[in-house]
Length: 419
Ligand SMILES: *Cc1c(COP(=O)(O)O)cnc(C)c1O
Image (cartoon, rainbow, N blue to C red):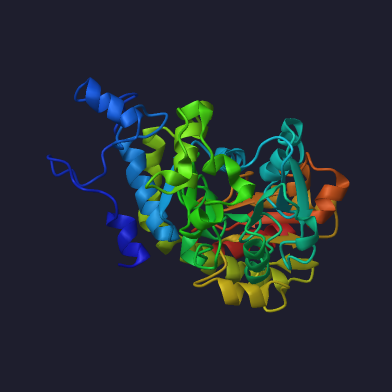
């Protein structure tokens, strides 16, 4: 079955009412058949619903469907993209460990890794995602994961998957790919050899800017990397917090089981069933929408590229772009709806953002409506000058998230704002 068919049907068996739409199971907890059944669920003799912080039937449909489309073996939905990333880091790291993070990442990922987890004793070391050049020299025994974006927000670098995966596999380190901007329709990191995929589903998956959400997908390759690997001892030794449970001895994917039984249990970054339901609706049309976003974005990138007042346009599918070869190699059906461009200076960037009518000045991306933002004064304001440079963000950069309006209307709007 193709992704588009799975996006409409996979993982849902109709209830006795024949309900066509996946029901929203708003319930905090679930009744056990009897005390023995309850005990069996708690000691994992059976898997089943206990409490919505851990699992929910609406979220479960979303998780199964998304895992199938990403090509993974299991998935866990979270309250937001940031909680998906934080839960993943916490699942693998403790104080004294380090992680390798691409320097070009989403602003929240940048502050999380360079500041928040640093206070918890986890060090983030940065590398260049576009070529993976300095990656190997950063690795030591305490390196627990390599985190990068398939297509980075907002600098639009395409990851050099082959180089990064080869190094990660040689050292038996788990790769974590944030596939938010690309979506599994355009790029499939698990097929490219990666182990874990995370998303902010608040963006293209939801698709209309309706709700926050995140998801963590485990690829089949992850289990072999964890099992008997001294880097990941805590998966191979008894977990005191769960009666001495050893995750790698469970008949389920152990990365996902530990997220569920330990990280969600203790941190609780669970989505509302209503938000999971919204994500299920979004997923149905994701592949149709993202191809249209991509078509519109390419047309607008070409327009900007030919405009005398625009100094530089970043869009991977422009043949002049440094990422062109990689996007052709690793993506199909387009390069998503994000693009950025350089103008004369800071004030000109603000003038253009304020001069549009159709575009809204919004920090979000992946909405069906077109959005414009000046990253240096908003999403990336908290980064230092050096961090901005290594993230590829200048004072005069403007980011567009191209929506589903008519491309010619959007071009006319930009033409007027640029003046
Ligand atoms: C938005 C975003 C996030 C954070 O997701 P939230 O759902 O806003 O918490 C993480 N990564 C990327 C690439 C994003 O665009």
